[in-house]
Image 1: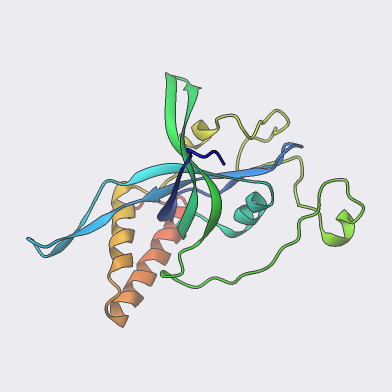
Image 2: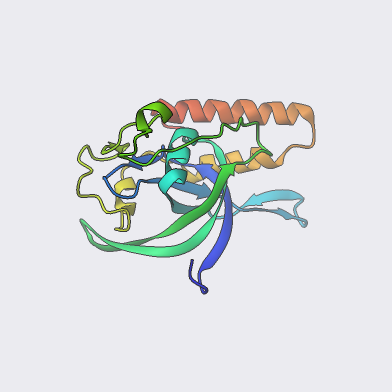
Length: 210
């Protein structure tokens, strides 16, 4: 990591299913992350939601395999990494977007529970691959184009998410609002129920309105 890199931590929600790519080189995984800030307006006595920010998260090597097998759309996450801007050519010309190259990533345990499972990834072509369990789907693109042979993990891929289903700003704001209201047990229960319902609807491809 360069000395002048912008290193930051973002708390948000996975807005797409991770896109796992094995292209015979460095495996990597990408997904969209939505983060909605909130602040308390003392004058009005209410919580106010800010603008939802959208980022593409990228992880490489063994971490990419762990993320692809652990993260699902709608889950709360905490991501730390290097923030940068990627540029690419879309159908309508040059485009750009924020990318967070994650160095550490996990579920937000203030929102629920997670179970840790230690993994051992074996390099392709090693003699122990059959015994230890080589990474499944080597040479495949998961959640993306079927042909991954020409995919370069360092090339821009943010445009791959242009048509992907994502959490709307309204839903993201509602999730953030529910996540903050944890003063009483009944509010916590309502939050969990609402989050589960929205996540199920998103997974089924149902449009969510709030």
